[in-house]
Image (cartoon, rainbow, N blue to C red; front, side):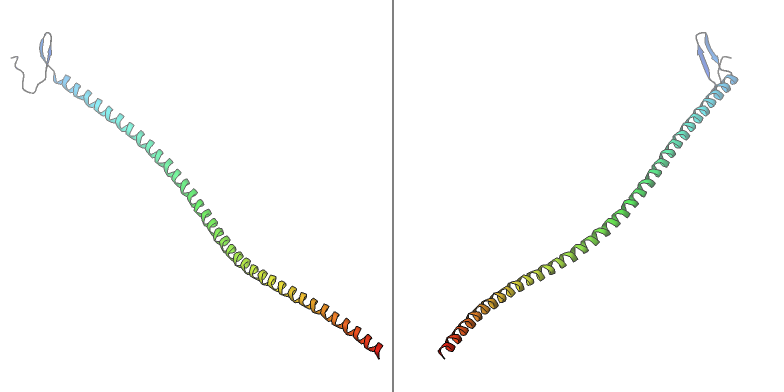
Length: 149
């Protein structure tokens, strides 16, 4: 009569073996199920909190990315402006260099003309002095010839 049906839980105690009642067994299953449900609920709550936290981190990162993209776009715009100014400055410098070379060539030619004009002026002065001397000599000879006559 103390035979236990197969699959029935037996609880051993110091006063002997005792068969668990099916109500005890159902209560134990209900407790285990409730604990499992509570554990799952807590796990789901923690996962939701983690997901919200990750979503907040993602949103912050997306905002930071948008800010960085705006800064990058502004920097690219400034780079375009500066590059354009540099190209214009290089063109102006090239034109100024070409003009300076032409002016140097004009100045060199002008200096050569000044030297040539000074040479002609000196030659002209020498000829004027020589002509003056010839005229003075001719005048003196004319006076001498007049006195003789």
